Length: 77
Image 1 (cartoon, rainbow, N blue to C red):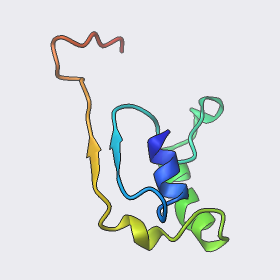
Image 2 (image 1 turned 60 degrees about the horizontal axis):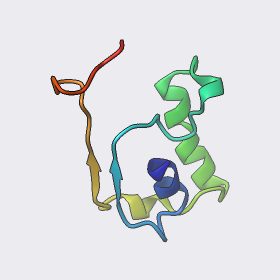
Image 3 (image 1 turned 30 degrees about the horizontal axis):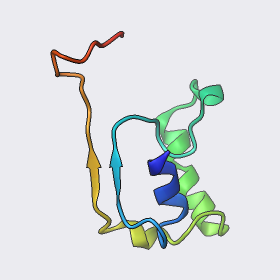
Image 4 (image 1 turned 120 degrees about the vertical axis):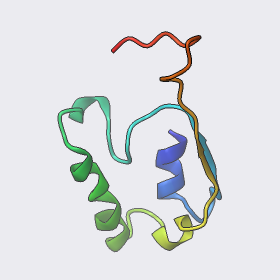
């Protein structure tokens, strides 16, 4: 959720820490879409003013944490 909010409100949220979640615009109902479909939403929504100015995202601090190679985290793929 922090990823979604960061993209929608880059003027209010200056950076995020991401642990899990999908790309911007993804929800559980559209999992069959491609990454390209979700990625294309950002410039489309920025152009029509639905989300904030994406130029503010350029130097924003973001940390992404994952556990796929951590033997202490059970992975169910």
